[in-house]
Length: 114
Image (tube, rainbow, N blue to C red; front, side):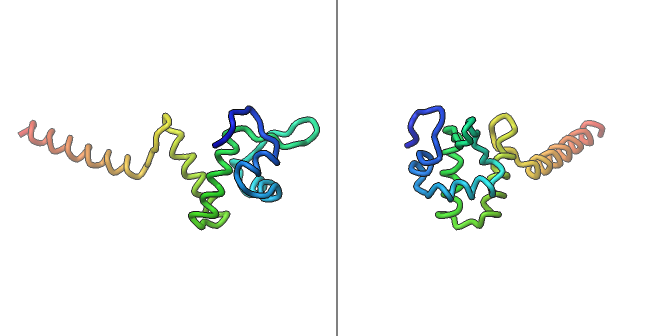
């Protein structure tokens, strides 16, 4: 359970997720999606969404056994899929569906022309 706070320092985020602070700093370099803000003193401040992302990264790496590159790709695919009005969007399925609808409409037009 993530506490209801605006920002978490790196030690708090590491404790919530269950990894060492250096792991979070490494993941920050490896995952484009993980970009905590820094205060004037240069301390990393993680938002709740950042902590949720870190938990997802940990799950992909430790439980699903993805490599860093594989987890990065999976996160990018997930992000790309959620850009369309907040629901998953699969372009290949849409193209196939459009082809099917077009064929059905063409066959209906042919029947109406006869």
